[in-house]
Length: 317
Image (cartoon, rainbow, N blue to C red; front, side):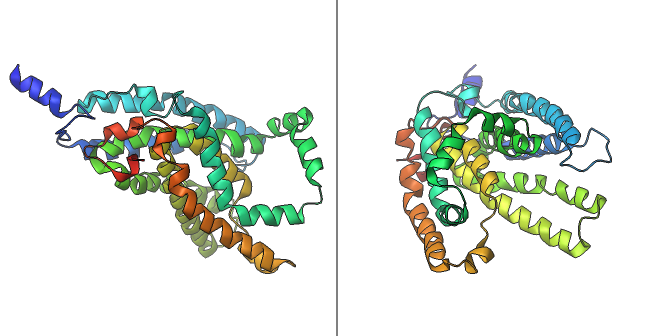
Protein backbone atom coordinates (compact mmCIF):
# COMPACT_ATOMS: atom_id res chain seq x y z
CA UNK A 1 0.00 0.00 0.00
CA UNK A 2 2.87 2.38 0.81
CA UNK A 3 4.51 1.66 -2.55
CA UNK A 4 1.19 2.23 -4.29
CA UNK A 5 0.79 5.60 -2.55
CA UNK A 6 4.35 6.51 -3.56
CA UNK A 7 3.59 5.86 -7.25
CA UNK A 8 0.40 7.90 -6.99
CA UNK A 9 2.33 10.81 -5.47
CA UNK A 10 4.95 10.64 -8.20
CA UNK A 11 2.39 10.66 -11.00
CA UNK A 12 0.27 13.41 -9.44
CA UNK A 13 0.99 16.49 -11.56
CA UNK A 14 1.17 19.93 -10.12
CA UNK A 15 2.64 18.77 -6.82
CA UNK A 16 6.17 18.86 -5.48
CA UNK A 17 8.59 16.15 -6.51
CA UNK A 18 6.74 14.94 -9.57
CA UNK A 19 8.71 12.34 -11.53
CA UNK A 20 7.43 11.57 -15.06
CA UNK A 21 6.59 7.84 -15.41
CA UNK A 22 9.07 5.76 -17.39
CA UNK A 23 8.39 5.87 -21.12
CA UNK A 24 6.03 8.85 -20.80
CA UNK A 25 7.69 10.79 -23.63
CA UNK A 26 7.53 7.84 -26.02
CA UNK A 27 3.86 7.31 -25.28
CA UNK A 28 3.17 11.05 -25.65
CA UNK A 29 5.00 11.39 -28.97
CA UNK A 30 3.42 8.24 -30.41
CA UNK A 31 -0.02 9.42 -29.28
CA UNK A 32 0.52 12.78 -31.00
CA UNK A 33 1.76 11.05 -34.14
CA UNK A 34 -1.27 8.76 -34.21
CA UNK A 35 -3.58 11.74 -33.69
CA UNK A 36 -1.92 13.69 -36.52
CA UNK A 37 -2.14 10.70 -38.87
CA UNK A 38 -5.80 10.21 -37.97
CA UNK A 39 -6.55 13.86 -38.75
CA UNK A 40 -4.77 13.86 -42.11
CA UNK A 41 -6.00 10.37 -42.97
CA UNK A 42 -9.60 11.46 -42.47
CA UNK A 43 -9.18 13.83 -45.42
CA UNK A 44 -8.47 10.92 -47.75
CA UNK A 45 -11.13 8.39 -46.79
CA UNK A 46 -13.22 9.75 -49.67
CA UNK A 47 -12.20 8.69 -53.15
CA UNK A 48 -12.62 11.47 -55.68
CA UNK A 49 -11.02 12.81 -58.84
CA UNK A 50 -12.11 16.34 -57.93
CA UNK A 51 -9.66 18.99 -56.61
CA UNK A 52 -9.59 19.92 -52.92
CA UNK A 53 -11.44 23.22 -53.47
CA UNK A 54 -14.48 21.59 -55.05
CA UNK A 55 -17.55 22.06 -52.80
CA UNK A 56 -18.32 18.32 -52.83
CA UNK A 57 -14.81 17.47 -51.65
CA UNK A 58 -14.93 20.16 -48.97
CA UNK A 59 -18.29 18.93 -47.62
CA UNK A 60 -17.09 15.33 -47.44
CA UNK A 61 -13.92 16.35 -45.67
CA UNK A 62 -15.93 18.44 -43.22
CA UNK A 63 -17.74 15.27 -42.19
CA UNK A 64 -14.66 13.12 -41.63
CA UNK A 65 -12.47 15.77 -40.02
CA UNK A 66 -15.22 16.85 -37.62
CA UNK A 67 -15.67 13.22 -36.55
CA UNK A 68 -11.92 12.81 -35.88
CA UNK A 69 -11.76 16.17 -34.09
CA UNK A 70 -14.78 15.26 -31.98
CA UNK A 71 -13.08 12.03 -30.95
CA UNK A 72 -9.66 13.64 -30.36
CA UNK A 73 -10.25 14.27 -26.62
CA UNK A 74 -10.44 10.49 -26.25
CA UNK A 75 -6.75 10.34 -27.24
CA UNK A 76 -5.91 12.58 -24.28
CA UNK A 77 -8.12 10.55 -21.95
CA UNK A 78 -6.60 7.25 -23.08
CA UNK A 79 -3.10 8.74 -22.77
CA UNK A 80 -3.86 9.86 -19.22
CA UNK A 81 -5.28 6.48 -18.22
CA UNK A 82 -2.47 4.52 -19.88
CA UNK A 83 0.36 6.55 -18.36
CA UNK A 84 -1.27 6.78 -14.94
CA UNK A 85 -0.79 10.56 -14.88
CA UNK A 86 -3.33 12.25 -12.62
CA UNK A 87 -4.19 15.88 -13.16
CA UNK A 88 -5.80 18.51 -10.95
CA UNK A 89 -7.79 20.41 -13.60
CA UNK A 90 -10.49 18.64 -15.60
CA UNK A 91 -9.77 17.23 -19.04
CA UNK A 92 -11.77 20.03 -20.71
CA UNK A 93 -9.86 22.68 -18.74
CA UNK A 94 -6.54 21.14 -19.80
CA UNK A 95 -7.74 21.43 -23.40
CA UNK A 96 -8.50 25.14 -23.00
CA UNK A 97 -12.27 24.86 -22.64
CA UNK A 98 -13.11 26.93 -19.57
CA UNK A 99 -14.79 30.20 -18.59
CA UNK A 100 -12.14 31.80 -16.36
CA UNK A 101 -10.33 34.53 -18.30
CA UNK A 102 -12.40 33.88 -21.44
CA UNK A 103 -12.96 37.52 -22.44
CA UNK A 104 -9.25 38.49 -22.34
CA UNK A 105 -8.47 35.22 -24.16
CA UNK A 106 -10.81 36.26 -26.98
CA UNK A 107 -9.56 39.85 -27.25
CA UNK A 108 -5.86 40.08 -26.38
CA UNK A 109 -4.26 37.30 -28.54
CA UNK A 110 -6.25 38.44 -31.59
CA UNK A 111 -5.26 42.06 -30.97
CA UNK A 112 -1.62 40.98 -30.61
CA UNK A 113 -1.79 39.14 -33.94
CA UNK A 114 -3.36 42.16 -35.63
CA UNK A 115 -0.47 44.27 -34.33
CA UNK A 116 1.96 41.85 -36.00
CA UNK A 117 0.00 42.28 -39.25
CA UNK A 118 0.00 46.08 -39.00
CA UNK A 119 1.90 46.36 -42.31
CA UNK A 120 -0.44 44.11 -44.34
CA UNK A 121 -3.49 45.77 -42.70
CA UNK A 122 -2.17 49.21 -43.64
CA UNK A 123 -1.50 48.00 -47.17
CA UNK A 124 -5.01 46.52 -47.39
CA UNK A 125 -6.60 49.74 -46.11
CA UNK A 126 -4.70 51.90 -48.60
CA UNK A 127 -5.61 49.67 -51.56
CA UNK A 128 -9.23 49.05 -50.58
CA UNK A 129 -11.75 51.03 -52.67
CA UNK A 130 -14.22 51.11 -49.78
CA UNK A 131 -14.39 53.86 -47.21
CA UNK A 132 -14.24 53.07 -43.51
CA UNK A 133 -18.01 53.52 -43.14
CA UNK A 134 -18.62 51.19 -46.11
CA UNK A 135 -16.59 48.53 -44.33
CA UNK A 136 -18.57 49.01 -41.09
CA UNK A 137 -21.88 48.69 -42.98
CA UNK A 138 -20.73 45.49 -44.68
CA UNK A 139 -19.50 44.02 -41.39
CA UNK A 140 -22.99 44.47 -39.88
CA UNK A 141 -24.87 43.33 -42.97
CA UNK A 142 -26.45 39.88 -42.27
CA UNK A 143 -26.59 39.12 -46.00
CA UNK A 144 -22.83 39.45 -46.18
CA UNK A 145 -22.40 36.82 -43.45
CA UNK A 146 -25.00 34.56 -45.04
CA UNK A 147 -22.99 34.72 -48.25
CA UNK A 148 -19.79 33.88 -46.35
CA UNK A 149 -21.29 30.89 -44.56
CA UNK A 150 -22.70 29.57 -47.83
CA UNK A 151 -19.20 29.61 -49.36
CA UNK A 152 -17.57 26.24 -48.62
CA UNK A 153 -14.02 27.56 -49.08
CA UNK A 154 -14.63 30.46 -46.68
CA UNK A 155 -16.23 28.12 -44.16
CA UNK A 156 -13.24 25.76 -44.40
CA UNK A 157 -10.56 28.44 -44.14
CA UNK A 158 -12.16 30.67 -41.50
CA UNK A 159 -14.13 28.27 -39.31
CA UNK A 160 -13.60 24.52 -39.70
CA UNK A 161 -9.84 24.40 -40.30
CA UNK A 162 -8.92 26.83 -37.46
CA UNK A 163 -11.26 25.13 -34.98
CA UNK A 164 -10.35 21.51 -35.75
CA UNK A 165 -6.61 22.08 -36.23
CA UNK A 166 -6.22 24.05 -33.01
CA UNK A 167 -8.29 21.48 -31.13
CA UNK A 168 -6.23 18.55 -32.41
CA UNK A 169 -2.74 20.04 -32.74
CA UNK A 170 -2.74 22.37 -29.74
CA UNK A 171 -5.51 21.55 -27.24
CA UNK A 172 -4.98 17.77 -27.43
CA UNK A 173 -1.25 17.49 -28.12
CA UNK A 174 0.16 20.05 -25.69
CA UNK A 175 -1.31 18.40 -22.56
CA UNK A 176 0.40 15.17 -23.67
CA UNK A 177 3.75 16.82 -24.45
CA UNK A 178 4.15 19.28 -21.56
CA UNK A 179 4.57 16.66 -18.76
CA UNK A 180 7.62 15.05 -20.37
CA UNK A 181 9.11 17.92 -22.40
CA UNK A 182 8.15 20.98 -20.38
CA UNK A 183 6.26 24.02 -21.73
CA UNK A 184 9.20 25.58 -23.61
CA UNK A 185 10.19 22.43 -25.50
CA UNK A 186 6.55 21.49 -26.13
CA UNK A 187 5.99 24.83 -27.87
CA UNK A 188 8.60 23.90 -30.50
CA UNK A 189 7.82 20.17 -30.62
CA UNK A 190 4.07 20.42 -31.16
CA UNK A 191 4.33 22.47 -34.41
CA UNK A 192 6.41 19.73 -36.03
CA UNK A 193 3.33 17.50 -36.13
CA UNK A 194 1.33 20.45 -37.47
CA UNK A 195 3.89 21.25 -40.17
CA UNK A 196 4.32 17.66 -41.31
CA UNK A 197 0.53 17.26 -41.43
CA UNK A 198 0.41 19.98 -44.12
CA UNK A 199 2.68 17.96 -46.41
CA UNK A 200 -0.42 16.17 -47.65
CA UNK A 201 -1.00 19.16 -49.95
CA UNK A 202 2.00 17.94 -51.96
CA UNK A 203 0.05 14.80 -52.86
CA UNK A 204 -2.72 16.84 -54.45
CA UNK A 205 -0.32 19.20 -56.22
CA UNK A 206 1.44 16.20 -57.77
CA UNK A 207 -1.81 14.42 -58.49
CA UNK A 208 -3.28 17.33 -60.43
CA UNK A 209 0.13 18.41 -61.80
CA UNK A 210 -0.18 21.93 -60.44
CA UNK A 211 3.41 23.01 -61.07
CA UNK A 212 6.84 21.53 -61.63
CA UNK A 213 8.36 18.98 -59.26
CA UNK A 214 10.96 21.45 -57.98
CA UNK A 215 8.32 24.15 -57.57
CA UNK A 216 6.05 21.83 -55.61
CA UNK A 217 8.97 20.76 -53.38
CA UNK A 218 9.92 24.37 -52.62
CA UNK A 219 6.28 25.18 -51.92
CA UNK A 220 6.11 22.25 -49.48
CA UNK A 221 9.28 23.36 -47.67
CA UNK A 222 7.97 26.92 -47.40
CA UNK A 223 4.59 25.75 -46.17
CA UNK A 224 6.18 23.48 -43.57
CA UNK A 225 8.38 26.33 -42.31
CA UNK A 226 5.50 28.81 -42.19
CA UNK A 227 3.06 26.44 -40.50
CA UNK A 228 5.72 25.33 -38.00
CA UNK A 229 6.47 28.94 -36.99
CA UNK A 230 2.77 29.75 -36.81
CA UNK A 231 2.15 26.56 -34.82
CA UNK A 232 4.81 27.58 -32.30
CA UNK A 233 3.09 30.96 -31.92
CA UNK A 234 -0.37 29.50 -31.26
CA UNK A 235 1.16 26.89 -28.93
CA UNK A 236 2.77 29.77 -27.02
CA UNK A 237 -0.62 31.49 -26.79
CA UNK A 238 -2.31 28.29 -25.63
CA UNK A 239 0.21 27.65 -22.86
CA UNK A 240 0.29 31.27 -21.68
CA UNK A 241 -3.50 31.77 -21.73
CA UNK A 242 -4.75 28.23 -21.12
CA UNK A 243 -7.54 28.86 -23.63
CA UNK A 244 -8.41 27.30 -26.99
CA UNK A 245 -10.39 30.30 -28.26
CA UNK A 246 -7.38 32.61 -28.65
CA UNK A 247 -5.42 30.28 -30.98
CA UNK A 248 -8.58 29.55 -33.00
CA UNK A 249 -9.30 33.25 -33.62
CA UNK A 250 -5.64 33.98 -34.44
CA UNK A 251 -5.60 31.03 -36.84
CA UNK A 252 -8.75 32.25 -38.58
CA UNK A 253 -7.36 35.78 -38.87
CA UNK A 254 -4.05 34.56 -40.31
CA UNK A 255 -5.88 32.37 -42.82
CA UNK A 256 -7.80 35.45 -43.94
CA UNK A 257 -4.71 37.63 -44.23
CA UNK A 258 -2.42 35.01 -45.81
CA UNK A 259 1.34 35.35 -45.88
CA UNK A 260 2.38 39.05 -45.98
CA UNK A 261 2.89 40.24 -49.57
CA UNK A 262 6.29 41.80 -48.93
CA UNK A 263 7.23 41.90 -52.65
CA UNK A 264 4.05 43.90 -53.35
CA UNK A 265 4.85 46.23 -50.46
CA UNK A 266 8.28 46.95 -51.97
CA UNK A 267 6.58 48.10 -55.19
CA UNK A 268 3.75 50.00 -53.51
CA UNK A 269 3.36 53.71 -54.46
CA UNK A 270 3.50 54.53 -50.76
CA UNK A 271 6.11 51.94 -49.92
CA UNK A 272 7.83 54.04 -47.24
CA UNK A 273 4.59 54.25 -45.26
CA UNK A 274 3.76 50.59 -45.86
CA UNK A 275 7.23 49.29 -45.01
CA UNK A 276 7.36 51.50 -41.91
CA UNK A 277 4.07 49.89 -40.84
CA UNK A 278 5.59 46.44 -41.36
CA UNK A 279 8.56 47.35 -39.17
CA UNK A 280 6.44 49.08 -36.53
CA UNK A 281 4.13 46.06 -36.37
CA UNK A 282 7.01 43.67 -35.70
CA UNK A 283 8.53 45.95 -33.03
CA UNK A 284 5.19 46.45 -31.24
CA UNK A 285 4.47 42.72 -31.47
CA UNK A 286 7.74 41.88 -29.71
CA UNK A 287 7.05 44.53 -27.06
CA UNK A 288 3.50 43.31 -26.38
CA UNK A 289 4.09 39.55 -26.77
CA UNK A 290 4.53 38.77 -23.07
CA UNK A 291 2.37 41.57 -21.54
CA UNK A 292 -0.66 40.63 -23.71
CA UNK A 293 -0.29 36.94 -22.82
CA UNK A 294 0.39 37.46 -19.13
CA UNK A 295 -1.15 34.43 -17.35
CA UNK A 296 -2.53 36.72 -14.62
CA UNK A 297 -5.22 37.81 -17.11
CA UNK A 298 -6.36 34.22 -17.62
CA UNK A 299 -6.00 32.56 -14.21
CA UNK A 300 -2.63 31.54 -12.69
CA UNK A 301 -1.49 28.92 -13.20
CA UNK A 302 -3.14 28.07 -16.49
CA UNK A 303 -4.36 24.42 -16.50
CA UNK A 304 -1.82 23.14 -19.00
CA UNK A 305 1.00 24.65 -16.90
CA UNK A 306 0.01 22.45 -13.96
CA UNK A 307 1.25 19.52 -16.07
CA UNK A 308 4.86 20.75 -16.00
CA UNK A 309 7.19 18.69 -13.82
CA UNK A 310 9.09 21.85 -12.84
CA UNK A 311 8.22 25.57 -12.82
CA UNK A 312 8.59 27.38 -16.14
CA UNK A 313 8.96 31.12 -16.75
CA UNK A 314 6.37 30.80 -19.54
CA UNK A 315 3.76 29.97 -16.94
CA UNK A 316 4.55 32.87 -14.66
CA UNK A 317 3.28 36.44 -14.75
